[in-house]
Image 1 (cartoon, rainbow, N blue to C red):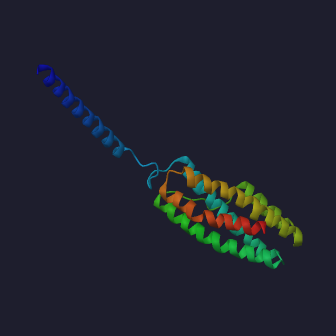
Image 2 (cartoon, helix red, strand yellow):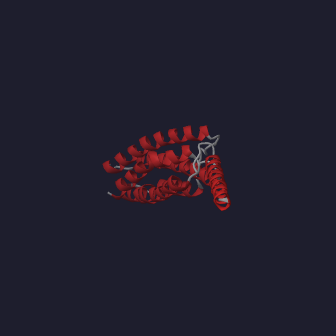
Image 3 (cartoon, rainbow, N blue to C red):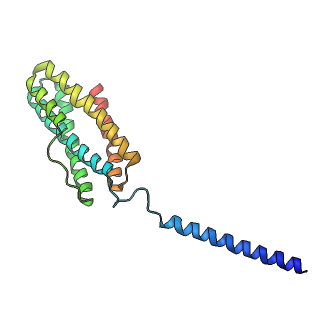
Length: 179
């Protein structure tokens, strides 16, 4: 009988101890910060926002030049689409940036400026080919990588949502340039 009481006490102690550990585990898991939070912002998120802003601004500048210089109907149509879509995306990015106290750049990178300068130096078919190659294909391949990276590894909910929401547009622009 004494042994039965000891086993019963041991069983109760084990049950209570197990319940304590389960409760402690549950409590710590609810206190962990979400992997993705609208307030969390790391350097990769900031880099994404800055690069996306510069990329959109460059696309608009290149497209405005295409509307002036190209005689090709398809190139002009592509350029018009770039202006429309990148203006909307820029406005959406600005809203996400404001929510996170990010000041976006209003200029383009040195590499993007070089492309703009190259485009200004050529005319006719040479312009059209260079515009589609640099602004259509190369720039959108880079943006696709950038947006995929933010979509899959970003910390900031607003920027991740922006990247996910605009991913199909980037891919559509790339497909349009390939066509």
